[in-house]
Amino acid sequence: MQITRNSINTTAGPSEWFSGAVYVDTVATPTGASRLSASSVHFTPGARTAWHTHPNGQTIFVTEGVGLAQRSGGPIEVIRPGDRVFFEPGENHWHGAAPTRFMTHIAMLDVDDNGNNATWGDHVSDVEYATAPSIGGA
Image 1 (tube, rainbow, N blue to C red):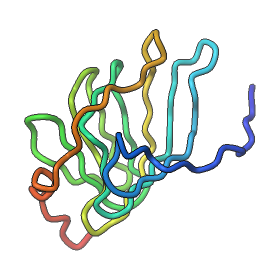
Image 2: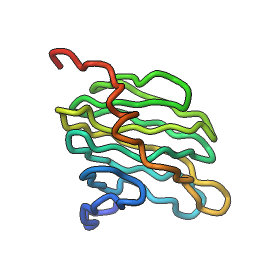
Image 3: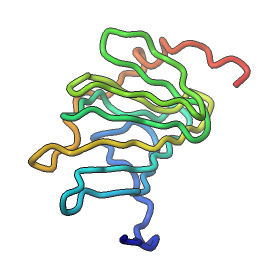
């Protein structure tokens, strides 16, 4: 058993990977035989990832707020606390907060043999993001 005391500071999400204000708290880092990478990612209203893929897929688990997720060629989906989204290995996608709501999710994935966790693409444009469905009375 290994206990890691909370000593890692919250970091701002890099602008190459995110649009808007996003903050990341590390939950797990690949160490030894473990390839698990996990983070608690906090999106301010309207903030989102760029398009990206993961070599071994990714699961996100929404813990609070209301968010949006989309895979390339698919509709933008509204996601809420308790929802889990799995993105297949190599599936181009993005996720983030709804326009008027904060959203936090736990992002979990296995890095590849070289320690890579993602390949980042273009930012989601405001025009693409504006096609999101209404979040209703969320």
